[in-house]
Amino acid sequence: MAARDISLERGLPANIEAEKLVLGAILLDDSAFIIAAASLEPEDFLLEKHKRIYNAMLALSEANEKIDRITVANELMRRSQLESVDGISYLVSLDDGLPQIYNFESYVRIIKEKALLRRIILSSQKVIERCLLDQEEASIILADAEDSFLKLGDTDKRQSLLRPGDIIAEFEGGISSFLDPSRRVSGISTGYFKLDEMTSGLHAGELIILAARPAMGKTALALNIAQQIATKEGNEKTVAVFSLEMSREQLLTRMVCSEARVDQQKFRLGYLNQEERRQLQMAALRLAEAPLYIDDTAGTNLMDVHAKLRRLKAERGLGLVVIDYLQLMSSRGRTENRTQEVSAMSRGLKLLSKELKVPFLVLSQLSRATETRPAGDHIPQLSDLRESGSIEQDADMVWFIFRPEYYKPDREDLRGLAELIIAKQRNGPTGKVKMAFLRQFTRFENLADDIGIPE
Image (cartoon, rainbow, N blue to C red; front, side, top):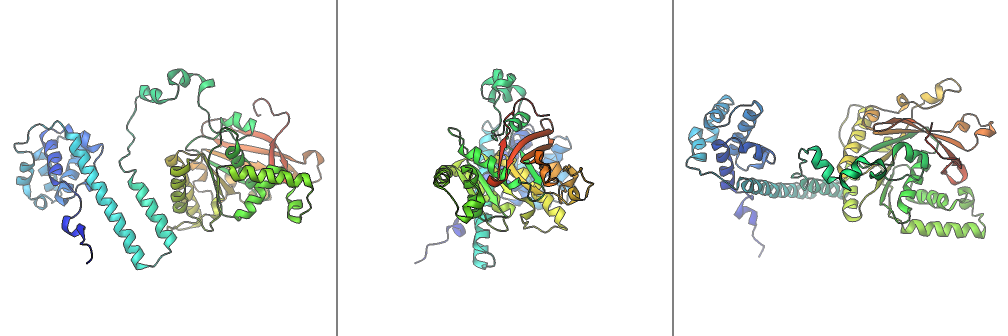
């Protein structure tokens, strides 16, 4: 015999008495509304009439008017909703004879908890319906389900306003560390000395756009930074790499050859000596043990990235996210044009980096404007960001890679030289960081005389 459907017997989780007590306490003393408004939304109430009463209270509070039986009844009447809440007699019943409530916050928490349970049930029903309809790929339904359930867990996490003293108290090391730059917690080191001096490393919640024309080495630089963060001895951090352009095998080949400093062409052709084979084996072992995760799913969209990263952070922690590259990401929503779509994704990535408290290094293409400018003026500019939209606005930092040897191949003095141009930095200076580019290893290196502040 099949188990009985308990949802039909019990109904949705709710505590109607708690809802009445909270509304009645606010009518009795409208200062209680401030406490309720910090946690409750109208949708947290089960009964429709309670939602309407609470909505009327919200409107009165926003208008800076007193909340009591008469003002709430008047607001409901103005909305033609008084009769739908059973008239003024129901409002009177909410606070009539109600004593002063000392555990008001407990009743608010009960309402919030029941509302969360109802949302879990409704989200589950939507997932079940989509599964039964069988009109979408299972992986898409699973990703949406993970995202919706994880978001439910954040509904009660509202950041309260903090005084300066509270912020300093939460700072590691207290006021001494807060005021002493040498003791302030810096960002994650990229492994490039001058870049770290200019940026203080990569910080939680930052969106860094790394842009360049094809063949300039943006993927190489991003992978170099990812490897150095994931393999830094004693301070390894989890790194997630989403490659929308290259397969995971191609990506790993580049990483191993770069780590071992072995010519990729020789590796592909198999012309390796014993020492190079040994270096490759050691590099592969180092990377195999590193907390480095690669995803090469074609057509990855923002929701897929969101679900995978939240799961990874919960299981392993997360230090850096690399996305190669922005223009290859797809959007599941409808947009009028590609520029709006890319802009929506850049905004989504910024919000995601802030939510996860992790720096995002996102690669982007540049327009052909750099190629069409007069000779000697090929240095990238912010206006060259392809399908830019809000990319420049959303980014905390914008980096460009410029290798002058690409445009002047006959100049021996430019061979192997590269510039990382910091064109925008929300919390620091702009400028250039000079580097060495080892083409055969697809590897960027610090220059031998890398000291002092970049010019």
